[in-house]
Length: 313
Image 1 (cartoon, rainbow, N blue to C red):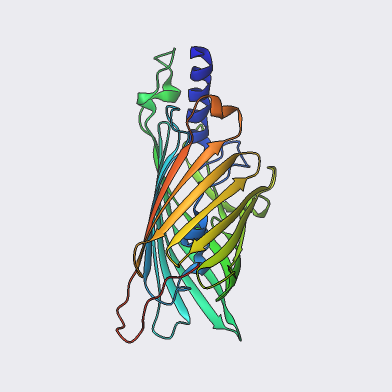
Image 2: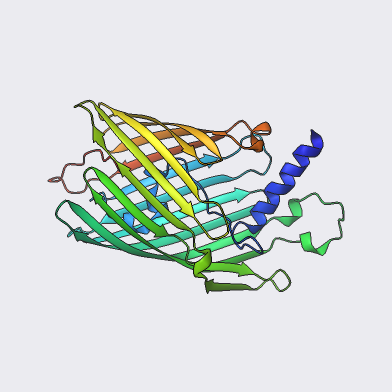
């Protein structure tokens, strides 16, 4: 068992080292979220301004609890529609730790919204920077003189994204490419390159629909599909029930990865608190007790003539 745990730790450390710069890992997915339906600003920049007022969301995720060096992720996003509601502005910030790796990113988004008969179509671009750092001195290695594991290498690189998002009162659908540049580091020189390599773009397709059963109960099926060249397609399939416009209860399945239980409470018209638990279906379930995720959302109302009402997405 000690040997197995040691191998798991080594794997987690290695994943952390290649997670951003993909030295030979072309098919790495970006950070995953179970409550993506409440954190869409981070996935799709075109979501900016879609709620019609200023909105902010914070998220904390502790993945694979019990495995040393497993991912811990914190995100913050905020966005708002300008007075004419044709323009949406947004900001997304992420901090993640995987083993001895720390990543920090900040992206600003600009969305242009076109009104349609039933809803609005938005197109957006985003741009920002990713700061990557390795605390290699914290690694316990057999060869203490190995120069490959000395110091704390760090690098800051630019990136950009694109997204589209169509929404009505009852449903939404969107597609995005959050990171369009492939950030790579030469293992020998430590220098970074940033290239547009279309075959390795990560595509996100998301959608959801609200079905009204009666005045007190609504159903909301959701999905998010992630695809990148060289890796299996990953799909999150979820179903949620909204009771009395206050309590969301639901579950989701991530293909070949996990089952999740989700609960979200609308504390009042402006505040929402959510929690989810993931049960791992892979061999890693022998070494962890699941993943936990907490979200908090707040909608601002600066216009007293405009009443803020809870949104379904």
